[in-house]
Image 1 (cartoon, rainbow, N blue to C red):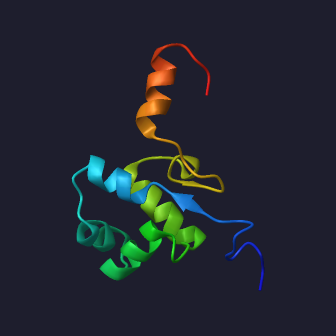
Image 2: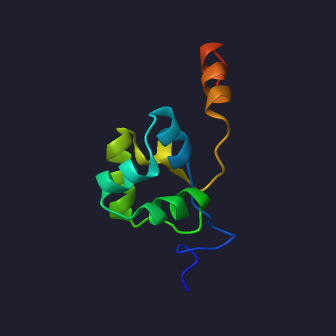
Length: 92
């Protein structure tokens, strides 16, 4: 198995749940917009499954964000902490 597919060494983290909540979007709404089933959205949010490149791009298009704002190889910090640091002139 390729280490890029899955594993402790190269996990893929995402902000799908946070972005959905910000936009008051249900899992069903996101699923419909990216043409997958609701259970798949849940599995992506939990990190049980990783998206294909095509699906990752479709998800990012829904949120109108670049891939690196939604997916990462490193765990995301709190968005509020990042925004607060930028407002106070600190670099992240």
